[in-house]
Image (cartoon, rainbow, N blue to C red; front, side, top):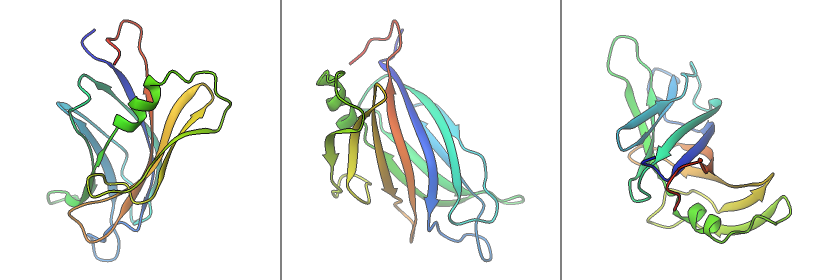
Amino acid sequence: MDFLGLLRIRIRRGINLAVRDTVSSDPYCVLCCGTQKVKTRVVRGNCNPVWDEELTIYIKDLNIPITLSVYDKDTFTVDDNMGKANIDIKPLIECLKMGLECLPDGTKVDRVHPTRDNCIADESCIVWNKGKMVQDMILRLKDVECGEVEVQIEWIDIPGGKGF
């Protein structure tokens, strides 16, 4: 196989997203990584949508950026941009490389703090839970007046994958 593994992204909800229609928006999320593009369903008339959807992408190169973009669905015109954020998976990968498979559930392995270089709005914890390393984060959207998206990422090893 030509890729390292899979990344499962749980897109939970949007928080205080920008208004792009008269009084609200019809938001949906698009995840892009290289040539891959996957998206959530549209939530009509809500600037605090709950998607609770799992999207999975394959990872070929840890240096290819993963971008989450939010759009407002329009019927007769081009969908409006509601901001974007990059998802940095390198802290999660570093924790996986430690080989800490024997930890009790709920063990916090690392904390990632907001910086100018990441889109994290608040401290993000990487946690060992139910045999998996997961990272919950709230991403602050760029290029927009307001809005955040709550996500969780999880690495999935695949048989025959190159690994990292």
